[in-house]
Length: 571
Image 1 (cartoon, rainbow, N blue to C red):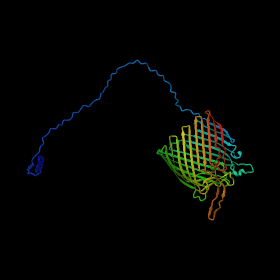
Image 2: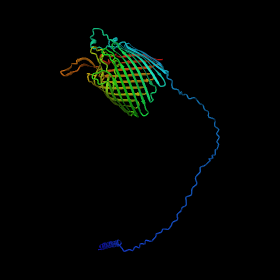
Image 3: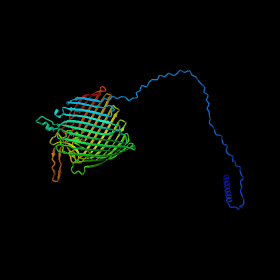
Image 4: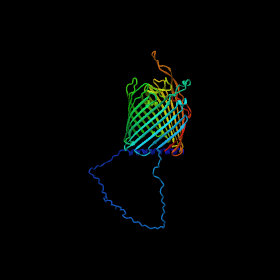
């Protein structure tokens, strides 16, 4: 009961409080009557406050000290005088004197009755007139077939001279060469069944070359030039002979903005004579180029303009024009790329053919090779300042590409045949390595693929080649060289299997020959040269150390292991 009374008391108090608050709120918010008086003539004034207009005083400017006075306190020390003992510096500022020997002679002898004699002599003084003479003879009295019947010899003599003025150089030279070969490459089947002793016929190739010209001395100036006249006479022991007159000139300009350009002109007139022809051939070419270099980027653009008068069936014109575009960019020392698109006409002469194959006999015609286009690209670089690599691929299209085949009438002599349309794809790679002057390595791999038009095979052309050259200098006085050469996929043309019958029943029957696969060529060459004194040295050479037949041309094996040793002397 008491508890209920307390609760009712608090509830009544709370209700009364709310009523009072509500009544006050309504009273404050109500609008009450008020009276406002408006006087428009009343003026409001504000009392005046004093202001200070006194300026800030000017502070005096500081002045630097005009005089400095120091007090020096003397200190006298009883020290003995310093004793100096100067000595002259033992250093020679002159360049080390290098002994130059104008003369050099080398002589040796080896198996296969092979003497060697070589000599050179040149001027070593800084005179306006410089000259050089050279002579070399090496012969093999015995060969791989029937001893003396496959003998071989090579002799060359040359003289060169130059006269220097302040602006240009006048140069000239005379060279005479003689090479003697034997036609010992008869069919082995015929050789084994000969009733009479085998006797090979010899062929002596003689050539004389004369040249004279002028060129500027400064090769780094804004312009340089060179002009040359040449004459060559060639003949063999039979009916082949050829005279050639050549005129060559070229100029090059350079700028400081990375641009350079050059123009090369060449004219050659040859009159080859052989059993089956007597011709007068002309070849004229103009090759302008523009090159731009910007840091690691290089670009070259130009033209090859060629006129030649070879007689070919269905020939449209004697004039050829080909573009030349080359570009390269070296991103870094370790990687760069290069590319080329070009075309040209390769000049061929009887002299160039016989230098490629010395067992060449009479041929029907001499033709230049037209390179319609060449597309090439690849990468190259140098890393660790010791390794150099290069890899590329190129595809070329040729007209009148030449091949050598054995003559059907005489298997010991070769003829020249041509293919009208040939496509050659080449994949190549190079690797070089050098460790200071102690060791160096150079190597190259080439892979070839041929697509022919009229020829059955790419006669006597390789499918692959590998070349490895090593040079070692274990001590200062000893030089060693080891060279490896491999060649494979060479095919020779054998006997006639099916003659060319023309069109039989509307079907063309091509000529078919026996295909002879030649064995892989593997040649190891070793050379060593030891310097006993500054003037006197001894040497030793070994060729075909693997003792292979190495038949590069069908029916023509080479000599076996060839060893030669001798000495050289400077004077």
